Image 1 (cartoon, rainbow, N blue to C red):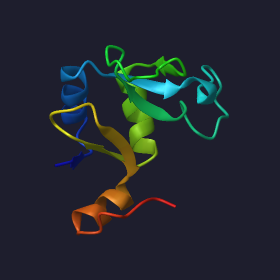
Image 2 (cartoon, rainbow, N blue to C red):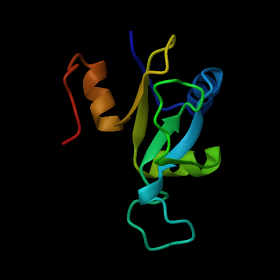
Image 3 (spheres, rainbow, N blue to C red):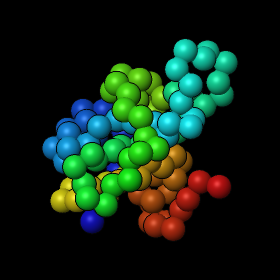
Image 4 (tube, rainbow, N blue to C red):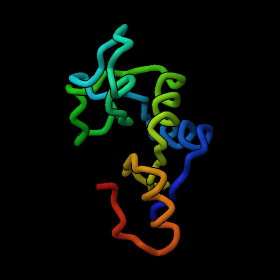
Length: 107
């Protein structure tokens, strides 16, 4: 069963225990550019050792940079303890899911 969290320590512990690292989609990451609307770029958790993982388009970033964008974008992590399954979702979506709307999505 999937869990949802906004706790930085829980996210980092879960990701690292599965070999995950903080990342951004390379085409959205423009280091040194202060005027970008998306902050550091589109966030992802990458799992370099996962066979099915296609991370050629991802660029590793530092956890502090990841969590700053995570907070600025008001995100939550939806994840499964025993697998690499994860999805970054809006906190408004997370709240709806907690109240039983399991089809809730940000539009």
